[in-house]
Every structure is written in structure tokens, then in C-alpha cells.
Image (cartoon, rainbow, N blue to C red; front, side, top):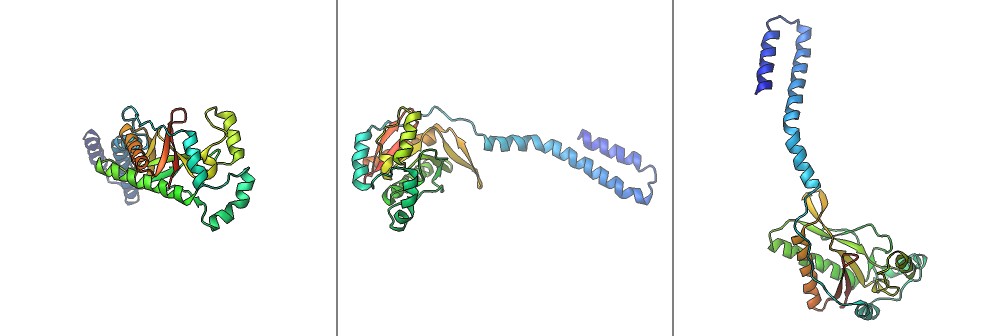
Length: 248
């Protein structure tokens, strides 16, 4: 109101003088520009805070997940049964990839509405069709739980998929928790992170959040499919992920 009154006063004083016609248009432009600046100054702070809260949400609660204990030997048993022979190297993998895709023995895994494939350092975004189907079913089950609890649109993170013997050996050098013989070699296994999930804050924006309730629901969705004998799972403390191998 103070700014508005000041402008009205300025306008009255200026119009006491008869401006020449060629100056009137310039005056109107200056006046409108000043008004525009004032409006921006008034509305920018709340809009800025709102955008910042959407792009950088707060953490919600302490993350607690279910601890599943199907250890490596169990995963290997099912991986060897339904997977394929491990690749010795990345080069061997790429040499055989085209045929495996053509024969429907491998499926490429890309981000979708249920999950986001994070940047992969020691694995390739491929799984057997059965494992890919399980990954999709986890997403559907998770979305159902979110809807039942009146929560928003979340997606979980995939942090590791198919590995070669070469990449596994490289990983073992930097991660003491990584076994030299893992079910990741057979295309039947993937890791889902439980450190965080992504939330859709706008139709075109997904941001990483630390929402304890949303992550607990993800843990429960995975547990249900485990009880239905669709997969075996181990909750990894160090890597903070669910290590999952398809059974059928």
C-alpha cells in the first residue's frame, strides 16, 4: 500500500506539468516497469520458498526396513537354475548381447514410472525376462501400497543389475562386502536401494527424498513377494539395499 500511494502521489505531481506528447509514452513505460519490479519483489520470496521446498524436501522420520536373510548360497542356487553362464568380461558381454536380446534371454532395464536406474559403475542394465517381470511387479505392488496409504507418487532406485566376472573382480577390490561369486553374474539379480526414494513433486520433476514411511512400504512390498515365493532377498546393511534374486 505504501508503494502504491507513493506512485499515485508521484503521478499527480508529474501530471501537474503538461508533458509533451512524445514524452507521455516514455513515462507510461517507466511507470509500468516500476510497478512490475514492485510486484516481482512482493511475490518472489513466497514462490521461491515453495519451489525450493519441492526441489529439496525435508527428511521424514527415521528409516527402518525389514531385515531379510536369504544369504548368498540361496541366491546362487536359484540364479544358476534360471540364469545363464556368466560373462568373463565386459567385451564378451557386448559381443554376445545382440544374440541374447534377439533370443529373448535378456531384457534391457530402463527407468520408468516405478523405478529409476541409477548410474551403474560395475554392472549393466539387463536382466533375464523373469527377473525383469519381478522388478515390474515390485513396482506395481509398491504403488498399490502407496495408494492405500494416501501417499504421493514415489519411485525406487535400482543400483546394480547384471555383472561380469571382470566387473565383479573390480568391485571386490573396492568393496570388501562384495563376494567373488555373486548371483548378479547370472542376470537374475538386482539391488534396490533403501537409503532414499524419488518423489514426483511436479508432473515433470522427481526429487530424491528420505521418507521413512515410503521406504518402509517398499520394504513391505518386497517382503510380500518373498513370502509368495517369487524371490529371495537379503537386506544389506553396508550397501543399504535389498539384494533380490528371482525364483520363478
